[in-house]
Length: 344
Image (cartoon, rainbow, N blue to C red; front, side, top):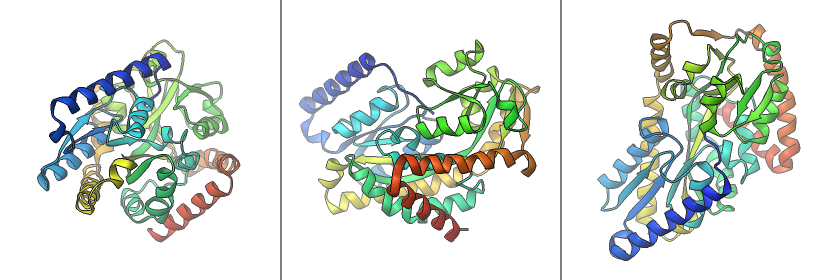
């Protein structure tokens, strides 16, 4: 959902974060070991913020450790917080595979259209029990200095546009904002749109000035960011569910006692169990708020016939994913399909 700032700003933010760490270490060296920093890509009241809050509560309830939370923007954008987590400035980072895909190409599998189901109960079982997520991806993340602790869903992705969408033909010549993710670019190209990578901070203004005419995000995010104010139509094609992940700096995690590692794993599990329950009915609730704020907004759930062209395009995108990632990506994709079947 977020995007990258320019290199000079990222460098400046890195210096600020490093300075903050150094000052804190000098002021309270004993306390620093027990004070963990956790950054994420959303506001404190949004899904990642709610998850982070529950994680913090579980850590602090069951230990003497404390967790400092850094919502979106306080330490930079997605690229900044990932760099800080890899450098050990942050102990924990919550980031979508949409951005992690730059480090771990196989993580783009979460953007293969129609791979993930829309049923929330099925999704909850899948993320918790999947071998691909809980075993195979761990090694891929570890190679980048990250300990994968949890992946969880944030809700079905919806398109918001200025004109109605009832099929792929309606996306022709539409400049559609996408995250800086190669496979997502390929998806919207296959759907017929003109994919336009754009930093999140420019999306509202871009829609307002017609630089772009569409974007996608989970329903709760459409409401919290007020994107509905600058678009007129919400369309559910069922093509994806937004995924995000909690990671720890691997050196930090590996250096902990077995007791503290278990504490962290248990906190991640508790936060996961809470967030999947928290999201039950969340999309419907936030959609009602959007309609109350803008009654003229149209909401369309495409039927099977209308989705046919998107599903046909999905086959092209899946082939592109395998082309991009080779045997490793193909193995991950096949394992995820097997896991999805096993958790029906």
